Image (cartoon, rainbow, N blue to C red):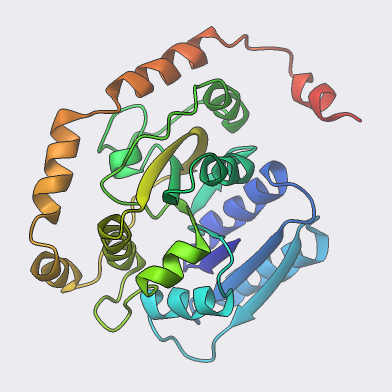
Length: 274
């Protein structure tokens, strides 16, 4: 798993806490810092590394090379392995990583798996294309999502709050294009469209959820370059948001969440007990 470190220290702290709470012990995690974290952010990372049950490593560049270039560098270092990329201002719900892995395993044509998010654009819940502050506990969201049928419908592109990328597909598509795009936001869309053109699928993993307070954003000029290379992209995204083909799935998640018992405050403790 790759976590590109950002500048929001409080969000990073919350992200790392959520990783510990919702990711199996021993999972390999790479915190890759493109010279973004300040002294407090570095202290947060060092304290987390000392206590986390995950198999974690941290690297920091002496000077930044840009978001897309840095993530491309990290992905190339991972060879042809499948890599989950989690935004450092995101908070994954329990079970998120296994749900993404299961999504890829169910369909060999899936190249990218994106979970629900409250700030996930095309993969947003409870309303498509909107950022909605949620009061629901991450554990309840995870339980409700896990009850959904695994249909894995097509998305216009993967979304940057969290995505699992099949390594063999990424290598076949040539990886990211940091020479054209500076932001992960735009580089991921471009990669998704190239994967789609090669016959791969960019799928929604409706059985997983990752919370975030804001959406990703392109750097200056990125969307212009994207429009030149992919002139149908904006219409494709707009049609998806207007037609909302995953409306029924969001409704099912609403229903599953509403049906959950609130449970006792100690329910999760008993559920995790050996």
